[in-house]
Image 1: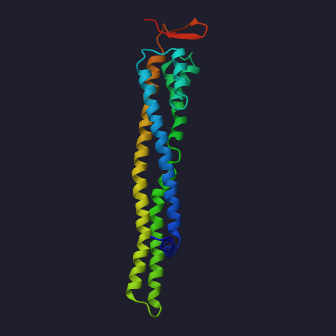
Image 2: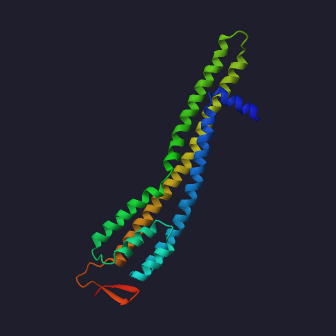
Length: 225
């Protein structure tokens, strides 16, 4: 297709094809950026969870190492909560603080997905609107002298391209939107799993629990058996 023909199609749809091209650009930008971000975050978070799961209990020095390893991940916020409050020995208090950290991180995970959702919803509506405008232009030729049926049917066919374009954008966007939402759900599950592991390995609610300083730079959390 030549640029002149594409311009003709865009003009016959009342300019809605230009708006749909913008929607497609927005959708592709969000898809690429979120897919890369969520992939890196899931991979890094899985490594953090595996390292924490391999430890029988956590110490301050081990928490500090994990925070440094997970500095760019949302998991670091949960680790920092346990690190910044070593005096917390109550499981419920620590659980509430960790849940608060998760709630702060969730908006960062699904950031910009509303733009993709809007593109998926708006594209078919714009396509239908462009088709209606194109149909008006096509049937307007019937009232003019010398109009032939092939011109009218050709105008209708060109008008339907707007609807097809809107449906194409919506189908592509919907597939990736569901995929990205599923990745966000899995990441939240990772954070919830890390929260429970920190509670089980760090919080000590027994009556004989104590915090003992072993070295000037290291604090060991130990429970009496």
